[in-house]
Image (cartoon, rainbow over all chains, first blue to last red; front, side, top):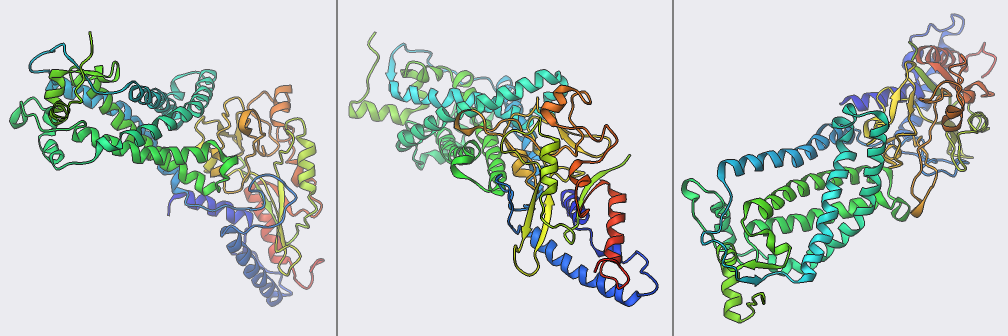
Length: 338
Length: 189
């Protein structure tokens, strides 16, 4: 048993301090048997009452406050340790750790250059609507990661190094921004998941993509490899489905925490939401870092897709050959008019 | 130092709600409308085995609210009392989820009934503000501990069901009660 249970048990023992103590007290000499019997009678009554309370018994109270008709709400107190001991450092690692790992990887490996340089011919890849919903989700996502990190782990890494007043301001600001940004993020997540799923279906050639790590490794047997990929490559598909799934978990758990008056979750369900929210955040954060690195630094010419919606023809043939062949064959290939 | 605890004797509590009233009156300056730091819950109301118990913050020695608070606004006094800093509180409500006793309360403020600053029992020992200051009175209520007195709820309990004080002293009184209660030569049976 962990210490939390012991503490609750201790509080309980004090609250309904029972007869383990009483047995030690010397009984009055005149009535030893009567006293023993009385103590035993109380003991069984107390233990019965304590069992009921531990199991979450509710009763009558004049208080109108939430949850006040239940004296004790028992739950597995390990969730608290899980949150502060594992999830808080986990989210820090998912953000800072991934940045360090990826920066080191790029320093060692170098970026993925376009073999034939830029052609200057820009191929239509994303519509204006696609770009809009991407940033509708992406900008809130970044602010949610930073404010969420402050809320989950700020007390461990930021609070000790700043003044009390500054910390109070930061954490309050983080909460407000987190609450507000949650709404556009959920719309972005929903629209992206629904509108883009058809291009993200796994194909057999995706396995080969994974075998050569997408062709991004610039040394050893992987060097110069260019695995087949359609509109989205296997890595992007993995990111998409991870985001779709954990975006759902983080949105649903977030709604319970943001609108408790609407959904009226139990306290235990709220705590479970907190845990699920943090787990999803760690996964989405780690993937987001990879996604941002791939788009901005790693893949030369990649960022242009989410700026103008067009990609260089050489980028298309190098990274998404099957897609380029397909649009060329069926006549949907559209160049940017200059 | 002492380790302050509450103890409620369910054999004595008569559900008079005197402790609730005493608390409300004593900490009136800090309590917003609808906030009740202490309440009495009656199990099996009107049936055999009826038992009432007065519940507020239990000032846990390893408090879940303290562990879960994103703003880290809780602290423990040298008397083992768990207090919080309302200037740090962000009204997220996590302490309410984590507290086994439902002690933290929130005034409803702002759009979508967003939570205000959390309020809970202070063991009548004020808050982080200076002792007996106006700010302390407005935010946290009375500070009887600094006056050398015990919490008003326990002090006003007519049947002495609710005890407050150092854990060892309180449990000593209780132990004695359990041993003598119901004995043939006792005043009360």
